[in-house]
Length: 207
Image: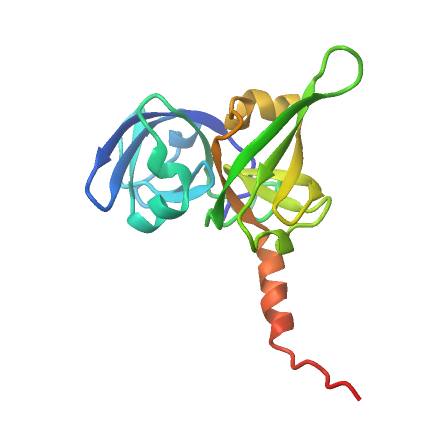
């Protein structure tokens, strides 16, 4: 489990094609400080398992399902990626509960500088999402975009907007995502559980 608070930007060192899978090697500092084999690290919101490591890099196997449902398959050497280690019991939950299980890919529709005065310090970003995800989003609710815990400004049926503060722009991939870029989306798992539980109750018959 993760919190959606990105710890660092790592760099893709190598992508080894294995037919229906890839081996992804990433250079990082913070996430390697205590990483062991079998540990979980979120890469752009995808929970991956450390299979190998050196003093400066770690490697994960990425299966076909992940390649089909996320943007991980489009990574090439030199790309920057958001990294977060799995949360520990003593860590503050600074974002929200994030599983690292991507629901779908979205697409950046627009970026609009915002803020008071002539110097715009943050941006409002609109992101398109596949049909069916909109029911899990509410204004001021949580959404994970490329592994980043963010607050929904306005939730629509086909898209939603988020406001990015300078810290997010400087320390994550959303600082340089362009219009048309794909991003990984994970909706709030609590909303999905509530939906399933409510669906288990029989509907009352009308008189």
